[in-house]
Length: 361
Ligand code: PMP
Image 1 (cartoon, rainbow, N blue to C red):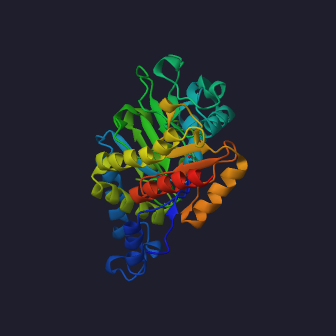
Image 2 (image 1 turned 90 degrees about the horizontal axis):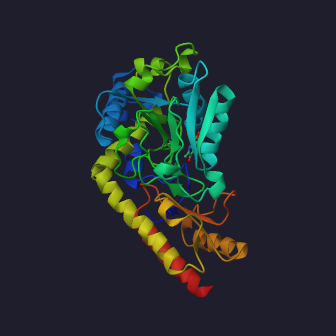
């Protein structure tokens, strides 16, 4: 389609054209019902099928056994920041948190409102350019869990290993890198992600939790905040964000068609290599903002020699059909978000544009 841009928005973000077309084609009459899925009851057989399919696709794609529960919640990943400590830190327990930038800092702040957080790693001391190594994580033996942010959307860093926690439940905020690569997801007792980057439309948060962790949740909470309520009702305690769940299901099917996480990872590796390749070839012009070993495959952050050149770059890129490249104000510069649905061609063409821009400037 001639009028579609290459969309590098950090989230909500680009969607595969083929998924958008399915949504369009099914929008007015969902599979012969004479109504849109938006207009269908969340208790209808049609929505039930979508919900069940989404749950089993999550287990299949992330290679999880049936000890893992899958729910689709609301309130964004931000709600998990307080729902997790409310459920698992009741009675004076402590949650351990690795602070790797903006979103984990927020998770710590919320945990300290309702309970107590222990900072297992203080990324601020590294200006958030560094992901902790195993040895740098200080996990108290009495911690109820260790919470990490697997990809730091704003700072541009990402874990490239799964921390060992010696039996302490590991919880991952995977909002900006879920389903982007192969990973031993079963090392996590829980992981969660807002749908609006790699899983579809804003409005729902995928929450996956192993049963042994679920059993530790706090029953003295209002029903909607108690994980057991939503797990017991398969996310249908109240009206779920049904349209977003439908889009997540379509996205999971699309991921399968790409060859699952293995196929997705292959394309993502090429995409990040295009962009980091230009950065590494031109270190005096394009300066990556984080240390190499901690680089994100999803959000590539860089600075140009001056703010003036950064503005010019972003404006000229936009005119050339590459949108959403402005860095977050806390880092500045340029951020290239290459989520799953960004086509390989988009990264390749942007890399060429970067080379050309450097030559001209
Ligand atoms: N965690 C991470 C890593 C994020 O990138 C974001 C959103 N960009 C959030 C949490 C917050 O997500 P939400 O807006 O869905 O609450």
